[in-house]
Image (cartoon, rainbow, N blue to C red; front, side, top):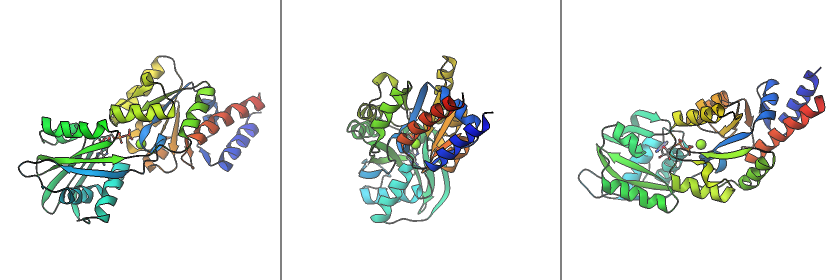
Length: 298
Ligand code: ADP
Ligand code: MG
């Protein structure tokens, strides 16, 4: 007797820009009590802009910020992460782009490629180290100085030497704070889950009303899956909302995976539900809708 009600719910969802993979999704949606929210591109717009490029002095480093931005932008131009798009756009608008060969992307880590005969690596300190680049105190200090101001900052290495830092600014989506309040009112516990640094994560959490103890920062893609499992093993029914390649495995592990329509194909493929408007408000609406629909059926 339930299919009609379920289909109505699905149809209503489609009208609201909420695409649901199957009728059983609504059942899962109804019972979630914890929602993990990716930061970049989910709580924030993910439309980052480069605030500044700061070269490190030292052997092998291109001494000026334009040269560094051009090398980094040329590699990032092959990437699809919001950080990649922002750095490529800044380079394109300024010092222009050059072709890249041997491009490699490590979700939640960074990118690597060869530009003008130089091996360029951009990303987290751990990603540089994985590629054999020593990350010394001066580089870490510069990175942290940028992060303390609330920026998402990445390291850039050229030919095996840390060469500088690019810092980027993101903006919280209009409506994210109101949506977090709605989710909490629905009885869900909102948790921020991000690969970005703890300072940025805490700032975003405060601004949208997520409790400081519910912030998980510096989390690698595997760590996002583990976080979902940890909540599940504590008895929680977990929704996870995300947009990136780095979120896909966690979206699949969650009881209810929610992708942003603006996000990557990998996230949408792994999710149970996609919100086309890419707003957290729509996520709250999806959960409200499912509860109402199933109440009607009963
Ligand atoms: P989030 O969870 O906020 O979406 P990610 O897991 O995608 O963040 O990324 C975590 C970190 O990995 C970034 O803050 C950055 O330091 C690094 N990173 C990821 N992709 C890139 C990239 N294309 N270029 C440089 N750094 C990157
Ligand atoms: Mg993201």
